[in-house]
Length: 270
Image 1 (cartoon, helix red, strand yellow):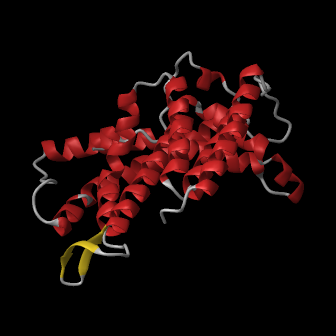
Image 2 (cartoon, rainbow, N blue to C red):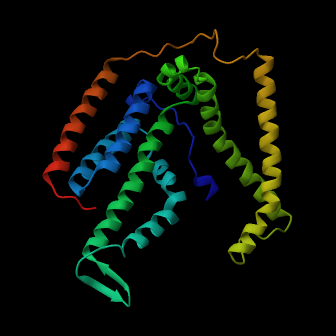
Image 3 (cartoon, helix red, strand yellow):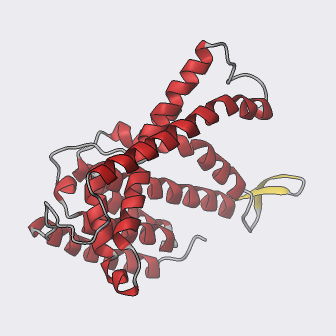
């Protein structure tokens, strides 16, 4: 399960999405998330699906990587679907005492499950096609107006990117520690929930020690290279909008028009 977590991983590829300005990619990701949560019926949600799947197709990332990004939330997805299936009004199709399943409940369950899946896919397109360095530069440029309010924008962007970058590293370290503990006879797969949680204690302690050691080594390396924040720093690559970025922006405006039309014309599901 740990090896299936793809959060924070970057996959280089010669695609349109990789060449796109990272600032625009962040904005379009936020735009896609807003479309997902504002959609009130299956027709407008279908428009959001097509828009996100267009980004997936243009990224040239193997579909199995996007499927792997959905595996960690599979339990949450099933739990949400089962919970929402009982929240519906109207004539019950099936009823057990006070629990009842209605047509509206089934529609709610499917609708909310699709929202969660699309949310993960939209976020995965951003992380799969944008390197940590590009994310840092993009976040810093987008939050630059807050610098006038004495907000440490560069430090904030750097912390966010480093945290995202070290997620795969910590997951890999966790898997190594768990393998080492199993080789010494530790049982982490049998027993109840409480026993499994207790079995993770020998994993968490060396993991925290390793994480703090990595953080200390990183801080030492940055200080030895005279890193003092964003003051006086220059950029090796200047972010500029290209023709493809303007086309992507126009497609987002077109998608917004189609989405709003479908959202208004058809009745809401939830």
